[in-house]
Image 1 (cartoon, one colour):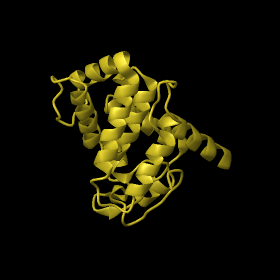
Image 2 (image 1 turned 180 degrees about the horizontal axis):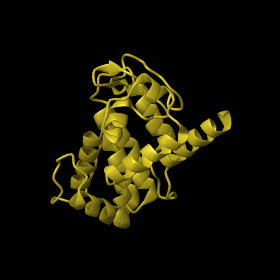
Image 3 (image 1 turned 135 degrees about the vertical axis):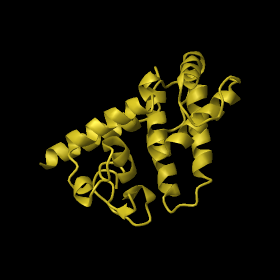
Length: 190
């Protein structure tokens, strides 16, 4: 459903200011509200343009400091996870870094300068390991969620962000690829 409008009542991301307003092109009502600083309407979500969605994704990429990650494959994995739950995504990265020995990284759910420096250092030393550990920690988090959407989220991880092996520098299609496909799809529908 990430390519068009949907307003499933069971999807908590479809609610803003207590109202069911929906999600469009992967932009949730909650995230839209944070981006625009006001409650979105059904019309705002239903008629979100491709240009607006791309502007949102640029803002989101910068707002959550994903632009500070030097490796594109790791940045796209982090973006995917952050779109699901920003604080939980940062915690997953921090747990992965701690598993790699970065004891100065606190599990505080904020992707600040210490976490970014550690992610970049880890990626420069062993990209495959940090990528796979972040991926594993995110899937571990998803497995704690009691949601009808969990299986779909894990399937998306496996489809677009498979484990990285020693022969690849880019694990999958990534969120940037997904965003471009969404943009192309909607541009051709007009």
